[in-house]
Image (cartoon, rainbow, N blue to C red):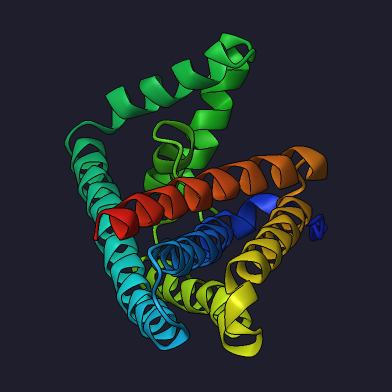
Length: 231
């Protein structure tokens, strides 16, 4: 009797995790940068909030559309390769069987054992065997456009709401300072959470995300200051 395998791996999270981390990171960085840019140009708090709100809505929709189009392209490619592989198996099963056995030989099995394994898998589900072992497809990395789009849009909005809340709650004279500090703090937290969920080194992730976030905010504030000075 076959025993069920209950071991849990982190690879199954890769689709929604990548989209969520990217969306939240972009939401924090782009919105805080917008607020700091208009603040450096001398705008009042009402203008900062309007700019931030517009950035939140536009950014969330842009992230959703971008993720959906990108992941849909991946899904279309996977579907086309699946149909191509199905046609090749139907056209010449013996050749496809030899090809699958050759893959297992390259992985270290003896020719006889490789052929036995390939034959057994072909008898059960040849298409699934080829998709998995020849093309590298798996349920963990399957393209899911709607999941990616939804995760990106929602996480962007949540990320963007953090600097927006800071700009709304703190005194106008100290908006730039508080938006910077709070945004970098949330970026560090995001890096730590993303690293924990993905099983990656936490310190490296935190440093990476906060460094590039700080760079984006600094450059945008500089541009706002220069244009504000010119105006």
